[in-house]
Image (tube, rainbow, N blue to C red; front, side, top):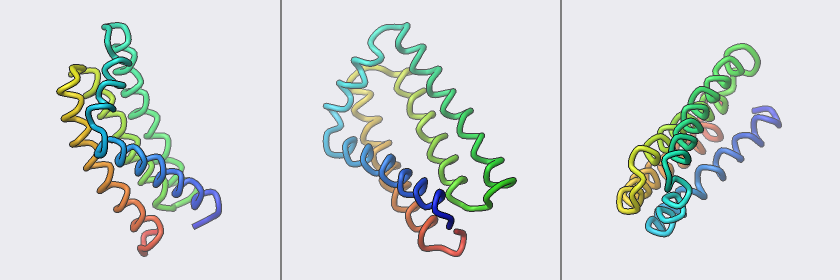
Length: 128
């Protein structure tokens, strides 16, 4: 993997792993923070828009993979970006603290698995 791809790979590991840990250790506290962010309709609409922009923006990484780099780190970034966007849309759709706490447990587990999978895919597989 080239130097930039390696840095991006480690960024993905940290940017996915830390939120996974926080969501699993303190799901209720994280839910309260998110509930505050999306407490009114205007903020929920914006949060949902950010989710869609994250998903659409993640598609930029596919041409980088096929045209420029052919390194799997870009496809992993795409998948993690889509996952993040889906979570944001789900947060906006169900902004109650109890629902957000459940979402934190589910997405925390998904992010934890995704972090471990991304690490092995990017740094210890033949797909590099």
